[in-house]
Length: 220
Image (cartoon, rainbow, N blue to C red; front, side, top):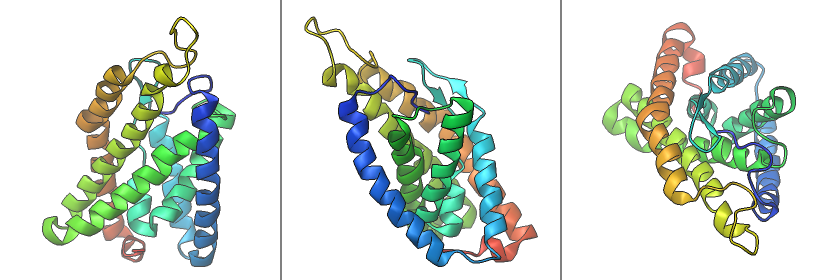
């Protein structure tokens, strides 16, 4: 799902920087105010787990990849702002040290895999846990968060042929339109990677409930 450098026109990633930076600044301030000493080890461990699961990439058509995120679990435990900040660290390390995702495209990746995934998962979980129970709601939240992130990536990539092309109509950046990106990226995450994200979220949350109940109850 990571978008590399060279795939997005400046008309896409420059506005994304303008949106992501203030959101991240606000999220960091909220995290700093709410962070407690006893929550830091668990939050750090879950951030590390998110890094690991995101490195398990499967190539998708068009040059991007699919994978689970690890975002939803952090959002359920510590809130969407904290989860987005955690993913900001994960994505930055991946881009700088592993070449997984770009620097220019960093804000788009963050808006997708951080903010969109975190807030979607958080809202879905709060709405569903009273009806479905904790486990099913966690699964649904993880699935929905991954699908939301994939939709942002598919949209950002799919509009590039329309947004930036030469006089002959040839795309200057990512060459495939929405007819390809939506089924390839959103479809694969709805059917496969979202299921993996949901299972991961529900399983780790259940494990934390058994082994570290105080951490599992750290609701935002």
